[in-house]
Image (cartoon, rainbow, N blue to C red; front, side, top):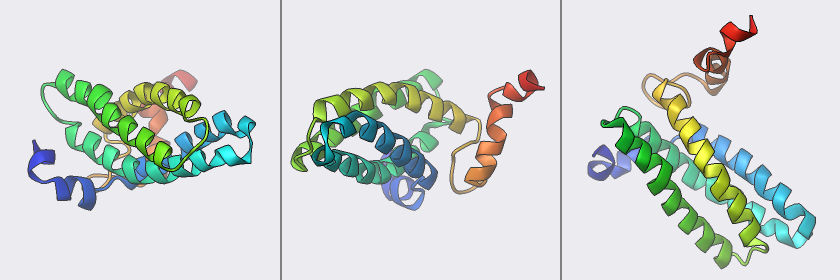
Amino acid sequence: MRMALQPWTVFVIQWNWKAALLSAATRGLLFCVVVVPHGAGAMRGAWIEIAFRIALGGCWGSAMQALRRARPEWLAGLLVALVLPAVAHALEFALLKLGAAAHIRSGMIVSVAFSGVSLLVNFALMRRGLLIVGEGSGSLAGDFRRLPSVLGLRRRLT
C-alpha cells in the first residue's frame, strides 16, 4: 500500500543501494559468462544489463523491503516472485532490444531463471533484517557477517 501512496519515498528516497550493487554484480557476471563466447560485440548486452540492474536493482530492493512485513505473507511473496520479475524482465528485454544487444535470448533465459531464486532468497533475507537500507539497517559487511547465523549455518559449522 505504501508503494502506491508514497512511490517517491519507497523507490527514490529509500532506494536500496545494497540490492542495486549485488544485482548488478551477479547479473552482470552471469550475462558476461553467457555472451562472452559470442565475441566482444556481444558484450554490449552485458553493459546494458549492468546499468539496468543498478537502476532497477535499487528500486526492486526497495519494493521488496517495503513488502517484507506485508500481510498476508503469501500475497507479498507472490508479488515478489511473479509481479516484480515480470515487470523487470519486460523492461530488461526492451532495453536490450533498444540497445541492439546481441544474443538477447541466451541472456534473458539466464536472467529469468536467476530471478526466481534470487528474489525469494533476497526477500527471505530482508524479512530477517539483512540487505535493507535506512532505519534499522546495518552495513553491507555486517549483513554478510550475519548471513551464516541467519541461515543457520553457524551452528552446523561449529
